[in-house]
Length: 456
Ligand code: ARG
View 1 (tube, protein in one colour):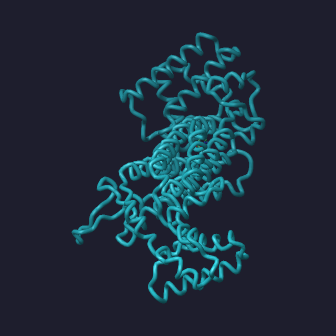
View 2 (cartoon, rainbow, N blue to C red):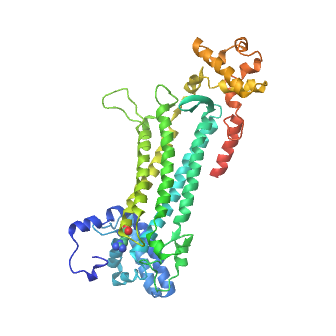
View 3 (tube, rainbow, N blue to C red):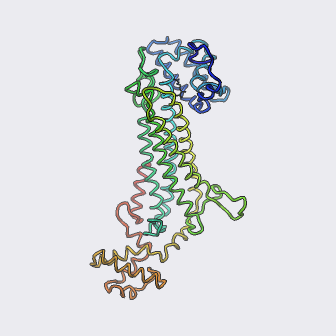
């Protein structure tokens, strides 16, 4: 039974039925669809468009539908045109012709926009929890590794030593901005379209504020044309989601590199790795690779949503039905990736010995030797030149910079003293970076306090 069959004489082409149906995608809106309908019916009862008794009957019918679907007693009809039609016909089966009054002053155009926003509002709240759990874990791990030194990289070359805490916390702050972006997106999602009807509003005396209040929207939309046809909130969400995935992907890339025998900085657990069907020795970081790979999906859904909207005239166009695939796909991918990232990190073994070992003779302490000369009065450019010569000397003679004696250093400049020798220790190099936001254990301890405050 179609919701719109009245003026048609011929049936729909069977391929068109399949082509235009969205039930296989939008079925997951059943819960919010019922909730929004309950709020709409309550409001219609209050403003007198429906009698109190009618509204009550519709609402209790919707509530028992909700129960039945939730418990699995009632199944959604996969052959329905979309979830809205299915719920309406189920309500008709339950309470009879009165169900037809629910759609008073409402169109599927404002209905679907409302359902989507309600759905995303709830889903983003739970997604934010997933991000917070991951952030929490990063903070906890960091607290244990304030003094764990490893090479910090630029251009993938050893640059200066940093602590593992400092390295992991970099991801904390990326995720913190992701939280910020998601919350911002959520704020704009929280605008109620219901009451816009098909495109122009309605003559019935609706109380839109009441519906907004019941469904916990921050406000009602200001323009009905915009309300039924805008999906920029989808782009907001997918854009924030893309950045989450890109951040996770970067971390995955590091875990993949760090778990190679060349690095051995981390060992990923058996729970998140897989073997090879031919090479018995293999333990592959597939989960990290898949998260990295799935980040492409978010970029694809974002691009898809943008292109979908481009050139759409006002107001609702059926093109918009395609948005859900992007949203649900994006949502599922971000959620599962956040969760698995946490599983991966929780079970990871940090090989602090390998990190330390990789620092020996890596010259990541060279800047500090130049800084030492600057403290003794040399201009930085001159100091840079002197230390450059020492590095070159070490490379040619297979010497370890931090193992050079004072006498050896003084060959290059007599103002070197005992301080110059001790400043070459990698832990000392790290501890010397005391600026706000630097890698010294003291600065990182402050950073952790701020991270905790952000989480609270
Ligand atoms: N299933 C449609 C969507 O997801 C909603 C129905 C509106 N259809 C219409 N012909 N006005 O956007």
